[in-house]
Image (cartoon, rainbow, N blue to C red; front, side):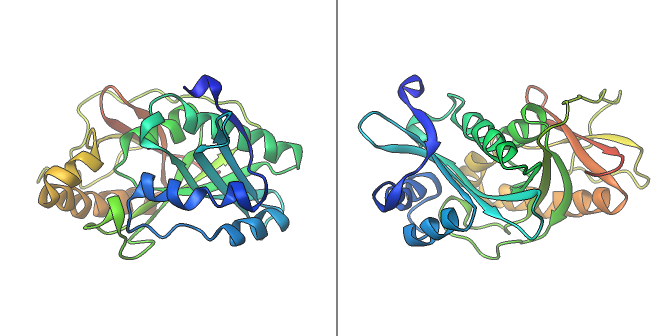
Amino acid sequence: MTGALTVRELRGRTELALTPPLARAVWGEDDGPEDPVLLQVVQRVGGLVAGAVDPQGQVWAYLVGLPTARADTQHSHRLGVHPAVRRQGLGERLKRFQQAWCLEREITRVTWTFDPLLLANAHLNIHRLGAVAVAYLPNYYGEMGGINAGVPSDRFEVVWPLGGAQVHAPWPTGAAVDPLADDLPVDLPGALAVRVPRDYYRLLREDPALALEWRQRSAPLFSRLFQAGHTLVDVDLSRGQYLFRREAAC
């Protein structure tokens, strides 16, 4: 189906008005989608509202990028893909469209946040796109509804340098750190692999208590890593692990 979808800027109130029902399909009925009029203003003041649109005009995925205080930086606020067309590369297509759109306007960095326990999102953001997670933001959005209900809204903050070459760092030898273990390392080495859940949203649906434990136990470890100067530089989807290295952030 995605072959028939065109990724482009959304046009006018009619197309922008298709984003609230899409947001509810992605994040749940309790999610608070953006007002289409506000999205029109975002476009007017230099932001980006893009979507994946089929020949009939239906929007199946969308992205919202906001201007920032830095002329060279855009903040990516939303990226959502309808459940019916997931796992077909639409998220990456939208991000690559954003990359080209920004570079045409001399915007060389994009920032955003994502849930630190969403492995697939991390793999796209860090491994495929080449962004780097540079900070841990505890309960960043406060209490949330929809598919995010029931756990603190902790987030990684990432920076995506748009013009640089992507380089994957070597992984350390030895076992990955398990945030649920009782014997977490006292001293943090320069490179550390950390285990994360394979499917956190499924865990949140099927075992909310364990999902909450993952959040509560991983938060101190992630916070320590960033405070010690580490950044999240790579993700191994097959192993379900993150790679943290102590190196300069973007």
